[in-house]
Image (cartoon, rainbow, N blue to C red; front, side, top):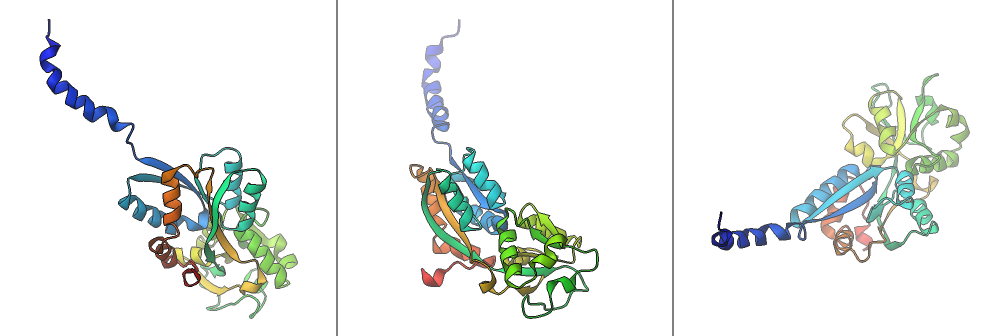
Length: 261
């Protein structure tokens, strides 16, 4: 029979090393974020993870999709929306939205990947956008029924008096990145996306920016979702407003409002 007593001095230290592993596993924070934040937020998260013992999992989709998922019980600790309305909607559903503030700002851009597109075309100053489309062409946009980029686009086109003409010619994406992809593949000769999406693409170029007065301000609010007792989530949410994080977002073309802070 094996005498285990003689092995106890060796076994005890090993147990001390193995047993705490689960207790001290790195915290995991799920962040629901608008699709237009993909590139910038991925870099911001990588920077944060390199400095902290924490794992951050981003979930990208249109703000409307994310808000509905959160309202249905998705376990996101943080939500960054591409417009204030969907954050307002969450609060109206009785979701515990905490430490809400406006984090970033953006611009609406007319883009194209077509070699036949003009070098510059500023909506409202040059010809009508419809002149960029062939007889059977469509304009790529986020779906105005729910995607923030599409909602801003509808506001801008209405202000410019072009909405009714272009309405039946819209190619509607489920989020702004889907709208961008149609332009990148030249399935549409032009599209309307955020300025930051255009800067992140190697295939499209900005023809012109929509005048900011034609649509509501493109604001990205951030908030904890019933996570005020989650120290790791609170720390990450605070870091997103730091100069280090905001400088990363600025590199991707977002207006951080740092001058006003």
